[in-house]
Length: 120
Picture 1 (cartoon, rainbow, N blue to C red):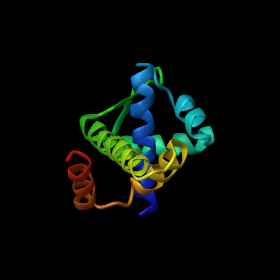
Picture 2 (cartoon, one colour):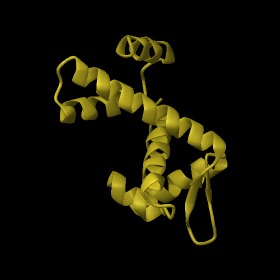
Picture 3 (tube, rainbow, N blue to C red):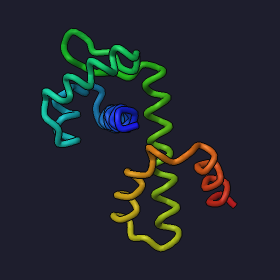
Picture 4 (cartoon, one colour):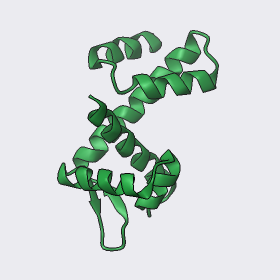
């Protein structure tokens, strides 16, 4: 379970960083997450092996189609959960913090229920 969560965090972070710059490198991911470069290097190797990312010869990371699919799913869950928490009265910072934790463990069925509820 923990491994999947960390994969999702890396992929979501890469996705967010690529929205700001097309030249995302491991050091950018390390800085964003506050992790060591060594930890990021190991994670990028695993993500490459699972065909979630590509890294070119200059170290630029890009998401594969499957990596982008996972990243977008988590990114959308994050925003949906944040919106729900704000809707029920949480301040934005508290909503963001908790959405970031829950987005990795909530079921797809419950996400759909929340989505339907917020859009009615």
